[in-house]
Length: 148
Image (cartoon, rainbow, N blue to C red; front, side, top):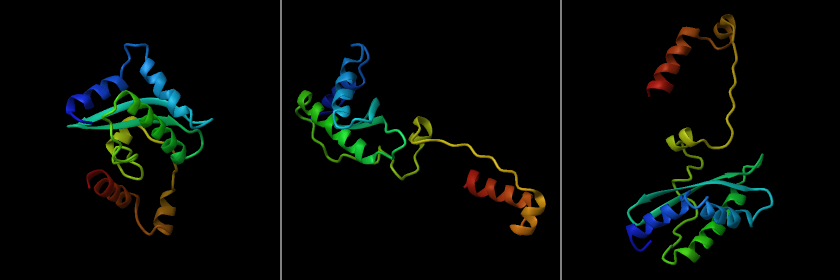
């Protein structure tokens, strides 16, 4: 954007809920014009100076949907350019997307599907097959995965 003020105005416009989300409806329409299946669910904008990082939360069903999301995202940017002529797309995907990267943002906001699995391995199987003890496995987990 040409200024930090313009970036802030873009954020306010994208996240506006006072207009019964009419702005979101327009972004959703732009996104969904590129796909018969994908759905735009939310828009969040992070500001860093004159830069605005737009994060779109989308539904892609059982598909990974990266191509679907990329096409829809580009349509959203093209629409935003009609409202904010100073908007310049630097890259369609950046570190805010956190694709294939560990990020706190994904823990907080979610990404993809989550599955919870539980398994009980009998003590004798741990000793005979894994050649260790349950106590040692717990210690490794705590020291490696939880502490560092």
